Amino acid sequence: AKEIEVLRKRLAEIETQHKSQEDSSRHVSTLGNVIVEADSPLAPELTAEAVPAKIKIPQIGMYDGTSDPDAHLGHYTSWMDLHGASDALRCRMFSLTLGPRAQKWYYTLPPHSIWKWQRLRTTFRSHFIGAQVCLIPKESITNIVQKDDETVKDYISRFNDQIQNMEP
Image (cartoon, rainbow, N blue to C red; front, side, top):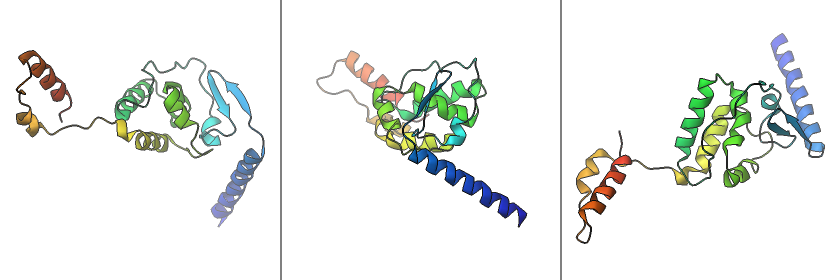
């Protein structure tokens, strides 16, 4: 019973916080290299965590929305794992790896709709799934044949490209 009362109070505090943030005008402040906005897609619990002073921006390519989202997530996750980043830090820094098109998507997410890395990762992947590289089954290697009007050099090049997209 006591635990339930504590949870009710905490829920009331969060609802009050959420309402005051909705009612306030757009507020932008800077924490290190990361911009935090009142209408950010990140939940307040994520933006409240301090950004370490010596944190490095992930040294991976910017995601432009036209390449495989899983590849980008893989590079980003590896970088953040290497640096021992928390769930909150992963969420806060992710937008720094997005190019203009992907940034536009990110800032159209509903305010405070992301409360953990798993949700951001799933939402990102779902939106950009059309750019995902689909792996072809290994068995289909026998279907890669030289076309009548194709040079041996072009055939080998096309064959090698298709091999790169095969299941491991």
